[in-house]
Length: 198
Image 1 (cartoon, rainbow, N blue to C red):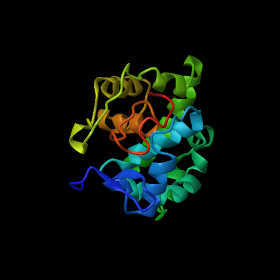
Image 2: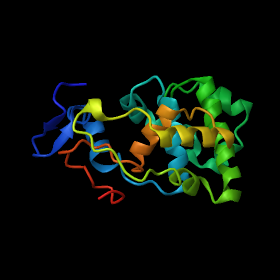
Image 3: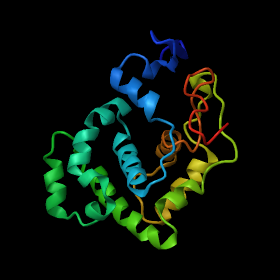
Image 4: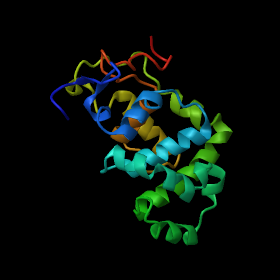
């Protein structure tokens, strides 16, 4: 990460360094990251992509997202839940996505687990029930935690429900991405913009 926590762009808006140079990352930061995701398909997609991101940069995943959506039936959990061995082999040959067998299998496993959760109120209600009572207010990257008691608890709970690739750090990143916590740096033009935290 850059020494400067926030960089003011030509448009006069302050963003973190990771969202300041790459146009795709800036667009994602300005319009999507940290905004509430409260639909099953959208949340299943985020969980899937966060799983694929493990060990890689988010920029890599974001660039491949159109190919991921094409390969995984737009992340419709009902469609992905019936993927079989032939689909796994097809996906392993798809150069547009991350070709990692364990992560591909996890996405299929998680689609099935998502459908099973419908009997208990659904994925969205389940995940959002782990929203903490307060959110961090970081002034620097060093103040942004990589996990939290809530992300640890969410990780354990999802694993009990049959989900895979949902470790505490991955779930913390999910919580940031879907607005469950607001880790926009204080001073960023996006701080407090989700409507979840005031």
